[in-house]
Image (cartoon, rainbow, N blue to C red; front, side):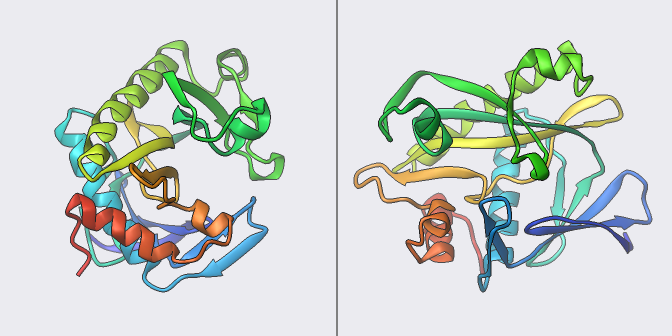
Length: 237
């Protein structure tokens, strides 16, 4: 398949057209950003690590019956994916209190949430990705009732699969975000699943193994991502 023109450049990935209208090439870059792009750095090996980590996770989810856009790895930092019409809403599942939930509600970080929570955020950098509810999604036509229900169903299924997977690596899946799109009318999981878009803590020490290391200036960001991958059996070399 032939890689063609650049279609989109995001905070950490670039998207290219191919000679097949149903497929795209995603390039994972070494860029790392936080706080709506106010903090940006280049971290060596990050693009490769996230690309291979994401491919590993997507394979596990597909094996569990979750429709994913990932097709195959093309190189250390490129993947072939299905071309989706993205729904402009992020789905966030939280198993423990952290991040914006702690700031909004004043609860203690690390509090287990039973049952897990499900939140929706509008993908809009200019507005700071504001939290929205299901009525907003329906009223503004971002997704239909059926699509929204399917996104919620798949989000909780992803949570079940990945909580067990990370538990096997002695880690807690604290929270994560997912993005979905339409492929020939069907809801499919898109974007990526990597430590950039979730929170992972060591089960015993609560050491942070995710992008909070970058946000909070803890250092060792890529090293933490690689540690997560090694605990799960991801091969980076």
